[in-house]
Length: 173
Image 1 (tube, rainbow, N blue to C red):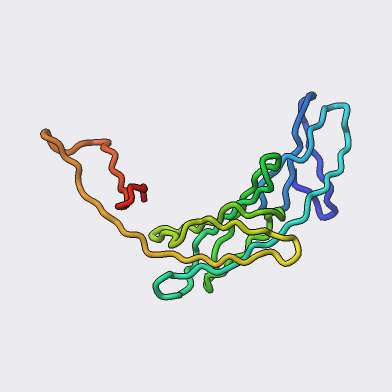
Image 2 (cartoon, helix red, strand yellow):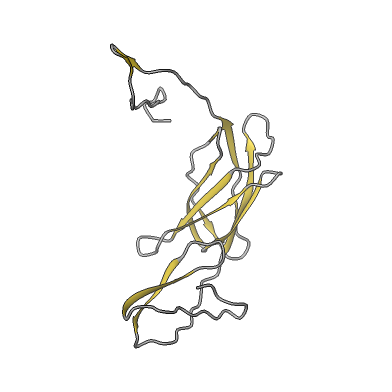
């Protein structure tokens, strides 16, 4: 169900028994809010936590030019007892992004993806995301390299062969 302009919702034809109710602001990831036993509960008002905004800019690490159409993904968590949450946003023509649906807390990772590009720096961004003011994380990307060829054996082409690459440090990339 989707809430109306006054926040009202209605779930119809739900089987009797234990259920987790989940809710989220538009564009955010659904998160379990409360466990209920139906039909003993007929009305339940939900209160969602405040959100914070993570914003920044994605640029070409070599030229500083903005990268449009990349997808920035960020994840938060406040510890083992909290559910982790992630959300994403695309970059605009200026390379800017704003993820406005994250819970305040500690950012565990920020990554950026776009076909033909790789993230220039590791995604270890451990900062506090506060409800007032949010946080800024700028990211850089590099053009991705490509290699292609044919896998053959003594009898000709090998169908279904798996091919991978690892950097000189042995880390797949």
